[in-house]
Image 1 (cartoon, rainbow, N blue to C red):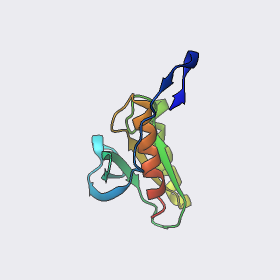
Image 2: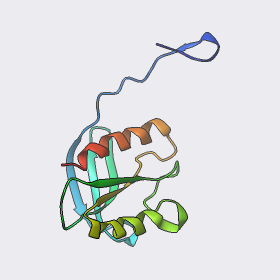
Image 3: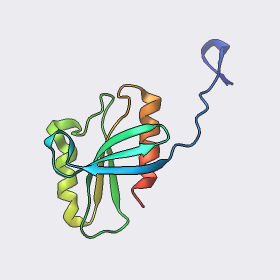
Length: 120
């Protein structure tokens, strides 16, 4: 139990640690650059666009948009532009689309699930 406003208590959601158990690839979503991926997780499928660096390496960027989700990010698609610009520097990028845009807790869980997967 967690104490809330004015001394009221509420039950915290108990969620097992989410994990990725499969990945499907295909053309990019929305006719975009990169490779379309669907990450199959214990929370449900998460759609994303992967920009894989040819240099490999352990450096990566996870792009997560605002409350409405989507792949583009702010400023007329800055995530896609930066993901492509970072490729020659050896940075792989994953542009994430939330399973439930606008639902803060679920969006945070999506980021939490996908972040460690970039290093594998």
